[in-house]
Image (tube, rainbow, N blue to C red; front, side, top):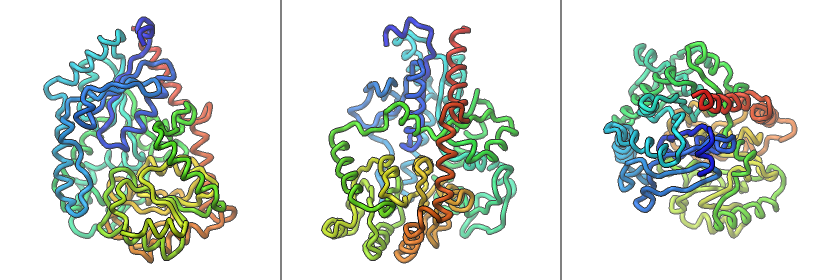
Length: 480
């Protein structure tokens, strides 16, 4: 990159939020900017003591694990039984992250990044939840661009949260009210559609969510707010924020950028081998006959949930691929019985995009994390929704009621309930028995796929916003 230092190029410093689901979309964006002639440095917290200060290049992006946060006090492992203890640990880590630049240490790091590269910093792009990024950009005298990685619907709920709190709608205790409330740009909602900002009896979670609410109130001050969404999918919510003075620019779904850049394939030899085994197994199955199951990287479900799901799969004889990082959560003997019957695969890692695009896969049982939902949309894959926390309950509502591309599970209204075996069987059966050629859910899924993919094509809405961003970044350094 030494030769690039002599050229007039934008130098972007990108800062993700600490949760994995937030890092991936920003990395996709960074890789696109690097491929568009920008120098991009992504600053992240170390994953462990061995990675402190580590630096690597990934598809043109310089990644430095240099943010001064002690990796020995990182996000906790999943607690099987003590949700309150887990949330307390998360709050402590969250507070340390939000205080990173209190002493100006991040500013010093960023200034050193600019000096060492020979290319001055020209812009800061950060997750909305990086509370100190705007002040950092101000001190550097460069624009601050915010990235929102979830639905625009959730952003709009947070944006109106002060009013909803003043009206007594949030937070709520015990069972939420069924009284509907309105937000411009969204369908009528009930408190139970966004339960995480209400009933959970954990003070630590409420503190985190109130900080999120305050950070969202800062977005009108951003040069622009990039959202990993699609104009043709969330147009009303996007228009509502625009009318409130937010310079919002949908640029999603960002994972499709990896297809254009050829960066979606797994990197390691073990992953390549595992992908080959999974695809070979799928190749031997009939069209639309397999359900894919994944609940994200950090989600902890209700006690007994995996036992209920395993029983539902076993009794229904439904073929499946189930990606779960911790196999100890699977009931003893289940994996061996499924392997013997050749009914399904339980894997610790899975090539999700390749699976969702495979002809033999006919459904996706998901926690409704937004990355997973947009990936499913882009392949026209209908879903069984089993949300767990955060924005997932609201996202599930839109998947089922607004876009018509999902089937819910009875009794899962506020996310934390235990989905029972028979209810899971019924929902899986309803989806997997739907005719891919004639059923409404498949028709809707194909329609959504076309809208989503069109946004990223040349002259599409998301592509236009990305092109405008790249043009503005280059124009700014030329004019200084």
